[in-house]
Image (cartoon, rainbow, N blue to C red; front, top):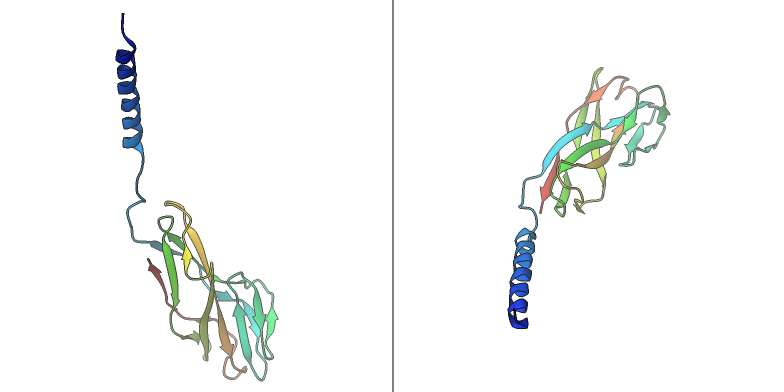
Length: 169
């Protein structure tokens, strides 16, 4: 015949064993830090437009909306306009700052040059990454080009490279 103290002692040992297993399997800290991974998903494009005698600006915001100033006429002929899209792979909870590079000169295929200023990002900088690898967060960045008249900026393709720095906290 077993007494009540012996039963409680044996039950207590079994319960302590279950708690020990649960404690061992619990995660007490976040994922170890890892460098962010970046890739370009889509290049920045301002689409087709016609510049007049005075020129103006063409802007694409991070949401993909295009606007013009001056005597620029937007043209909708198969040349798509859209923001640059970068994909970031980072631990959830990582704070990421986006730092746009300096103004860039875009060179025309038929002569001329345009001045490119990078704009805002979506999400706004800084932001807290909410996805876990291997999933990625898309970052959209817009910009504005300054366009002269048709003599300064003849029709053609204008290309160049710009720099964006992603800083991980």
